Image (tube, rainbow, N blue to C red):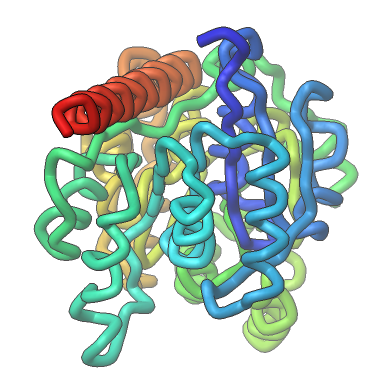
Length: 394
């Protein structure tokens, strides 16, 4: 592999969330002597990632949301040909559906897709039967599932070929997210909190999937027993105005703060007494991994990959999605029993250290890239030999 392989990461969402942090982990961690890295994504996302992407990575602004966008596909094809791309990796099904046909048409040797989540939006006869997914799977060489649950969904529900599906869990920087970071009391003061106020933290995009509305409904139940509790929402999204209105309607302005997107969550996790993840669905939530790496108690909904890191009664507490009372009960249990919270958090950190490190995620992905490319190269060589032998016989 000399010169380095040309690897193109591709996404279409203009916002920065867990998927984008996943890609950023790869861009930072992959061996630059083995890969020449390019990230193709919307210009708005490039602005949000400014300063966090290694200088060796080429950033290419491009918006492409459908394979029917002829102009967008042409621009992507131009980029792939200029880069002489060896590997194309699309993140989320929509990105793969939009970009994979162009990558295949341009002769890119290996095409990857990481779907990241169970696609709850798949409703209606056509979308819910996954015909398009199975058809487009012929153009995809490998699917990376971010959890065992995600892999089962791809194989058992979508009907994708099992040999193409490989599980590589999300990971975090366990050195950065650690229990030794001191509680940032000055941050509490800036937020208008007293030093003893219990702080609940939800670090997630303000989108329907993440279940913020359920947590806002649960908060008054928590305040009945811990009236000084505060809820910090770290994230941006389309629901911010709606959620702020819901806060005001319930008279919770004194107990809630919306602090927007935070690129460095380590300090915010140090602030938290309980990290809450009230999602309706997840693939493998990075915030849960980061929180446990930081030895913070986690209360989460029992969704897909979440339960592979937040194990009820062992590394955290879980409740059913969409249940405000159940969510409040779990939060209150952690607040009432600090020793329980410490035990769960310590066990959670041990699990993250063993299974969900950033180094492990990057190494496994890098090995898979190289293995898939080598298999493709061997297959191409074998086909060339057969063609040459056939021509020699004529």
